[in-house]
Length: 304
Image (cartoon, rainbow, N blue to C red; front, side, top):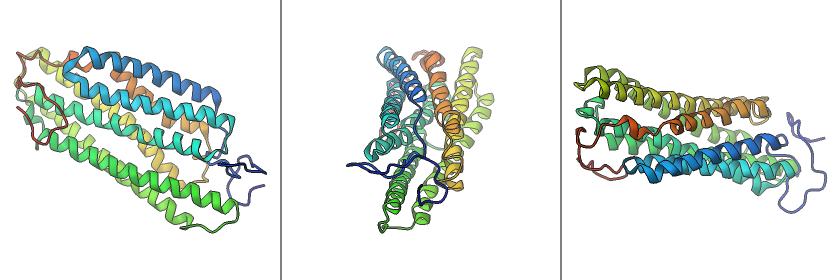
């Protein structure tokens, strides 16, 4: 049995090179679940790549979703390998990094939808109280910073518990490692919640836009679709935060059912919603839009 309180997983009595004595997953990853994850995210990846080449005005958006889907495919492919050997440290790190970081480009695409709406509908700038690109850059940088903290915290957690299982000294305490991870998740959750507030305000402000009926309907549908996908991503983030608050060896972190329902499902559903209909179909034609210059999102200054 393991000497670590709360650990219920399998024990590796004779760890080989690159292996741990305990499973850092805290369970043996389901083979079927990993296959389903790799396949479904692979389908979304193909759809987004198709949209990427077909719709020039939204290439950044589809490129970001394609990148997030690709990372998810890699993460679940690593979990397939983890099913074969749950004690491999490098495989765990790869799957954890890819699955945790994948929401960054997905969230960036969600931020970009609001930027697109404010720039491509007549008088759309009135939806926001600040420059659209400022909002995009702020929330993307917040996500990058908080994910970096989470990855560092998770790496420390794995190192600490692995060394404890071997009876070796650790660089930091388990509490310090977990607090780093929790801090990153807490700030990320707060930041994303702030974006949701701005998005809801923008949806209410669409009522005051002087637009033809079809454009008014389209901008509301687009922003409501964006809100739904954002709520799904927030659900996944809150789940991650709750897991870490309970503790690394808590029941939530050792449940593959919760992982499937609150990690996999929210993200795949969010991507699926953006894969049913291309968002370009919501925008006015370029000769009807408020701004006629094609917009690229990652510029220092807004281009109008």
